[in-house]
Each structure stands twice: as structure tokens, then as C-alpha cells.
Length: 326
Image (tube, rainbow, N blue to C red):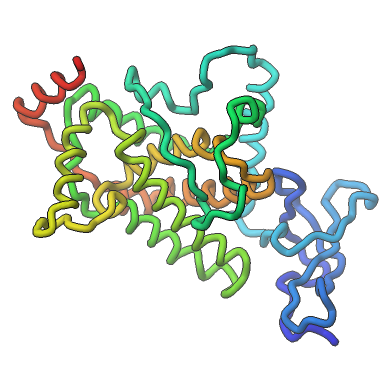
């Protein structure tokens, strides 16, 4: 009995297909339901990778295929660039007992990181032992995980660092466009590109929920510069006060895009502390890469990075500097 639903990819259609961590251009040769007796069965596809011998032709599940769009071509290019950087790094890296720093960590100057947050699933829900923290020896054996950060966003991070640490300014809180609203806007624009009820749609929802959860847990522990900590303590007290305007709000509903970028810089370090299998890590990295690509677009930058910095008064500066000495 043939399934009632139709395949997403047709015969002879050109697409992009994952082979391990990278996307390659491929041609769909055939399709068939995974379970012919199930009307709702998912499809699998026989693909031929462009420029590869026919011996590499393979049946793959639908979640390994991507439509051949400009956006997905850019995704494939960025994944390839990441892999090249990782290969160069692994070939030149010398054994060291010091903890490895993530990209852009230099923009934090001498700002130290505090104890990492308790590790939870970026996919929103814990699944058995998949997200338990690894033992130290296992963690050190794991390969580096990188999340591509477009140059446009790197510049914003550097400007953010200078405003806080050099100019002694702080972000005016709450921001007009908080991190939660940014993520919701991305989900709203991305969801129509995915088939309703599909695994891709479910993954998008789970990743957005997971990023919000990580943001709320990580902000006060590892995302702030020392100069911002007194401001954070005041904000946190306000969220706990039942009559305050911020009562009950989460940090992702108060802090904005600049702090969200800081989270993306820290995520490789946090993900590396989980027991996620390589396939899950690759899929998560793909979703996060799509978010950073979207954030770096001109129309997005102009809308979501609207946080105002204000010069801290002398009382705040004196108190913050006093805290740094202790």
C-alpha cells in the first residue's frame, strides 16, 4: 500500500545532501517510503553526489537532504569553512594543560569566566543520558565544536566590549527588542520553510526553546562583564519583587541582541560538556549557524540590535570598581 503523503524531493531533482558534517550537491535518483505499509511513513531517497563515483550512491533519510537554495548554498559554504578552520587548528595545535578558549574570547579582555551553567539540552528536552556532563577525561577527548560567527556580528561584539569595558557604559534595560523576541521573530520567518509536523519543524521549535533556556541560565553566570554585574543584581531583584514592572520576567525578556551574541560565542564550550552524539551536534550546529546567518543580514541587524548604551554614573562606577578589587 503506497503512503498517502508525497515525497518532498522528486526524481532528478538537484539538492544538497549531508555526508558526515558537510553538505554536498547531489541528484535525487529515486525515492521510496521507509515503511510501505504505513500511510504516514517518512521517505528515503537514493542520491548521487555530484562529482563522486556511482559507488557512493546511497539511500538517505529525508532529514539529510536540503533544498538547493541560495541560503542553503551559503550554509554549505560556511560549514566547509568551519571544517577547514578545525583541520588547520588540529594540525597545528600542541598538547597543553590549559583550558582551550573559544573564538572571540579575546574580546572579553581580562574578564574571567565563572563556573559554567548546569548543562541542559539545547533541544529543549532531556533525553536519557544524552546530555549528562561528561567526565573530565572524556571531555578532553572530544573534538572542538565551532559555530560560525559572521564578520558583521564579530564587529558588533567588539563594539559591545569597548562600550562596556573601555567607555564604562551599560546597556539600558529592559531593551526594546529582547533576546526572546529576536528568537521568536527568527522562528516565525523560518517556520514557513519547513513542512508542518516534520522533524525539521520540531527541531526548530526545540532549538529556539533551548537557546532561550540557555540564555536565562547562562546570563548571570558567564555572559556578563564585571562592570555589568551590579546592574544584573538590581535587575534580578526587580524580577523577584511582585509589584515591579519586571516581576516574573526572564532574562531573555529583558536583555537583548548583544548578550545573545555573547551566548553564541560561549555555546561551543557548553555543548562540548554534553554527551550529545555527533549527529545531534551536527544538526544543532546547522540550526545555530542558520540563526547567526540570519542575524548578520542587513535588514535583521537594523531591527534587532537596537540596545542603547548609557554612561554609568559615578556612584555606579565607584561601586563596580570596588567590587572588582574583592
